[in-house]
Image 1: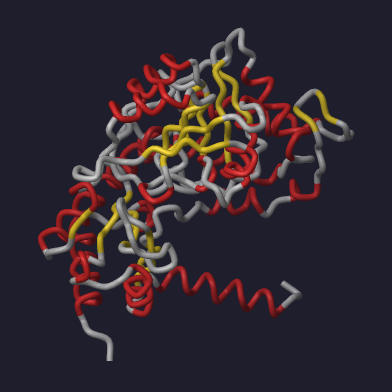
Image 2: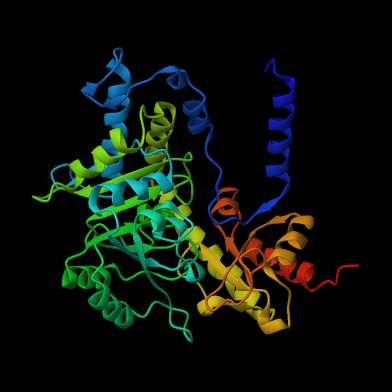
Length: 393
């Protein structure tokens, strides 16, 4: 690289990544093939529109790439092109979610989603996001005692508020979501059911987490978490007489963006092929084993794990412990100083500031990519415990 300043920074970041234990639940490590697709000549091509209907010329090969990506997406999740449509042009998870609302929810309409404190995402209608400014959020949470979703309470809330769309999914909820119950609730109030599977898409692909496709009208996902791909997104829409997919495609383009990032789309295609293998299924299973090993050892060491455990790749750890421990920001800073990267996170019922909440979020996907097994995560838990219990000077 001729730009030595940037080259030096990239090399430094590469070295940093190699030198830490990465427990960020929304990060992973892509293959060399994914990196090659991202850095290919495809970044030179502008192809506004969709395959077969572009506004620029020279699309012979990029049309084939986008169509192949869509074919692989449907195949990976066991879907047929007659019943499901997939848009692979959304630039990231947040724009993908906004596109769904733009296509299906009238301005000022209601989005029913998990509140941020209990594990939801900003784009599930939270007030500081555009999704909470253009639309109204009807927030639901978890039971204060079990810290698990109470579907009976969600049903009551839906019947009262009559949302236009219900979002089932999370960014910091460690348990399995019952998509069937969510569908029953959505149908009872005439709402669309959207599942944001950004965090657990790789687990669904690996067959170790329930599939949402049997019940959802729309499924959105990023591709860079457990799916282990580039930073991008996909939107799956059920094909029926409501023409959901046409509304969402128009919301993506021309509603929200212009030309797609074809290097990202090619990298998604590579990712989907990698995920459609026995090796990936084994990987997904190991992610869960590792999460349970990490959660279990932390509990043995005296730490409170939100909801008592995990059914996925992520763990919410209460570091504050009703004032007996330390805040999430301090915990995160101490761990980073000790070579372990996490993120501070609110926990259900949190009374502390989001900038220094009561907990941290841990994930096992990235370190599982590096080959770590249960015994390694037991040692990681012990290291976390030692760092957090050592008083700073």
